[in-house]
Image (cartoon, rainbow over all chains, first blue to last red; front, side, top):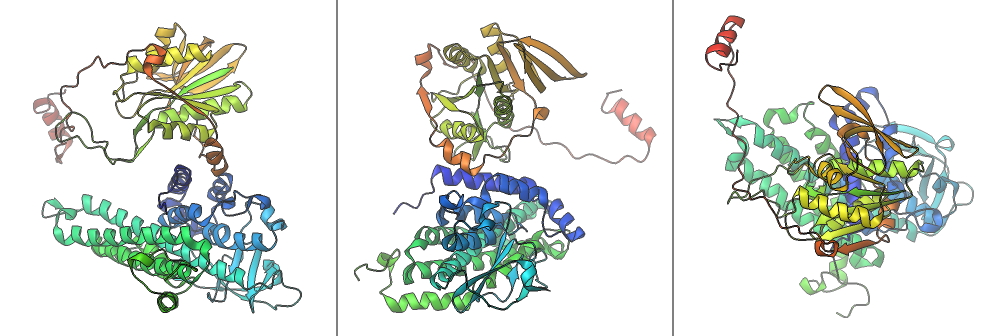
Length: 344
Length: 249
């Protein structure tokens, strides 16, 4: 199996990174917060123009027909930028679900429109108020509702950029689809792309802390020159480096849809969330008292890491899935990329 | 009208360059490389000229190592039609690059060659001017605005004293300054299409150009560390220090 990303995949990720670095600066994010903005229209327009919202849509639905392996680096870039807009949730999770049911649906025809998704594993629906449609789960069936057809109750998130809503609705009428497997796919994508965002934001936290450690001086030297600081950061970076390949391997194998691929996704979610937790706490520590202040961006990342840790399944849920795989077949290095039908 | 646009692979502008321990140059191993930012502006301008119907084809050219194909691919994703890589492992100097571009401009029958005003690695700011001289074409350097009509390129140049507007009879060489435009992001569909666009591979000898370096780098070193400043209590002390210590007044 070739785990290297193609030049196209790397160039797409670079485009996403560059665009988000230019348009989701600290000052821009803070302006959004100060003005209670749900979305930065200029940034979202550029995201749409660049085709990022079309990545995971099949070509017959007007998309680029790319896969999770293509989108995973874009999700990492979104995590790195602490992107407030629901690019990952809409384009990476909800849109493929709707396209699998109704590729000609009008909502998919507008690349700027976002779709919110309410999976049973998440108590609240993110960005439901700004979405063109909500995909809602009930007894394995899929229902589509417009925001004005449901009652949305805003719930506070510890992440100031996450707009969470409790959705009150009635599953009346014909569902869009009764196939529960689609929700299983959505869960896999959700967990995978949350893991990718965790890997991205972990890297950002380390980068911010390293920059600070290079410039903040104590006893005549940058604090990064002291082992007590540099080893903290190195340990966090090692954890990120070990998490990223797990996330990438999970993305490549998601299409297997078996106990093995699901365990790899869960493994990715666990280790990426742990890396994000360690990296953000380390960044906080390296900044000293400054780290706790509103003026330093570390708290945005710390809060996002905490929020993503439980989104699309917390550690307990994902450990259960890894356990299910361990019970299903032998484990060991030679089974690292096992799949259903493989001889034990 | 065919446009040639030159793109150079350089150390990414976000990377803090480090001098090699043997002081023969800067470290490039394992360093992120990107298209020279001024060349990105040049590509963007070429694409805009094509979108306006002024240009019919844009050929992106790079001279350097095999990996420079990635830089050309970026230009193709931004909207160039095809690429040419003149492959060499030699560290090419501005004169050699200008000679290669001259040969290509003549071979392709280009009417305009657009380049960045300088590359951010060596900041030479020489290739465009040398190319114009070799071709015997007029040049509009440091362009902040370009308009093409009736066989003439009207170029607004950023100069020390302000802005200067020159009219160039085509064919001409134009070098892009920072404020000429804001380069677009390569869209994902265009990145995918760029894979299908061709990149011709040539060697300098195919164009009859000798790229052997003519300059010898004696040593490369970090800029001297700036000394910390001091606070002076009043204007009189400041003037006294400027006059007697710094000796600048």
